[in-house]
Image (cartoon, rainbow, N blue to C red; front, side, top):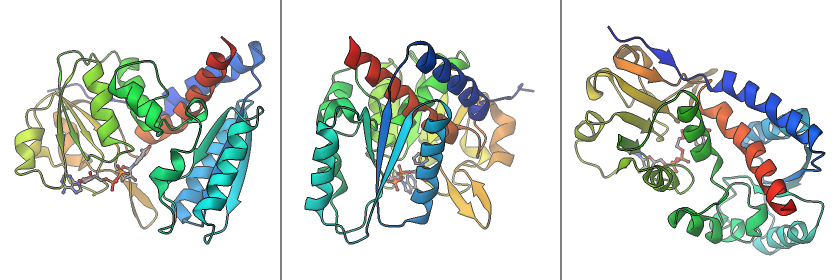
Length: 280
Ligand code: NAD
């Protein structure tokens, strides 16, 4: 029988936010976060509200720039440039996804790299590629920080990641490679997914398909990190079928309460990192 430990992101987030709040107060850090939200995607509205509330709770000024669904790329880029030049602004987030008419990557890349709190600009991705100090994408940083908090070593581990998006799976693969893990990156064209999941010491799923990973696809004692979010009625489900996978796990993230809260906390972590770097 394996003793199961829940990777409690919610609890750790609360500890981190307390720590950040104290740091901001003690070091008198004057931090401002500006979030640009284009259109009215209902999930995005919830995420943005969480980010704003979280920032304010720990003493970070947070300003929302809601833009109309029909905003042009030029108008959006003008606002980004204005915020880039504003010395009061510490960090800028362009909330994803943006409406079809806007090229998200192109616009996000207009954010000056030292205010790029999501780590999506070319310069920050290049830093990640070369394993240099950088602003790491928040979900990636949150996963690594959560694993480290529970004393889980990455060096030499077989890590399988499912999902290769530019915001989660792909940068996560690079970041874990930088930590000397042996990374397998699976996606929608992967054949026989279970061949790759069964071999994983650490299995991370970022797909968004509830119950994709079942108990017979994982190895005894594996460590599970579930990034997936699927809303069914009022419930939030992850990619792991918790009932069949958790009995085989040594550690596993709950959904909700695992990776999600860590992601929001890492926005605050990146803002503090940026502010301190600006000062040195
Ligand atoms: P995405 O849609 O951009 O990418 C999904 C990936 O899954 C793709 O790379 C695709 O190839 C792969 N995929 C799809 N079906 C597959 C299958 N059957 N087998 C293997 N791979 C398959 O999504 P994303 O933006 O990376 O987000 C993924 C999930 O994570 C979503 O549910 C999203 O809501 C969630 N998410 C959570 C957080 C968090 O903080 N918890 C942050 C970001 C995203």
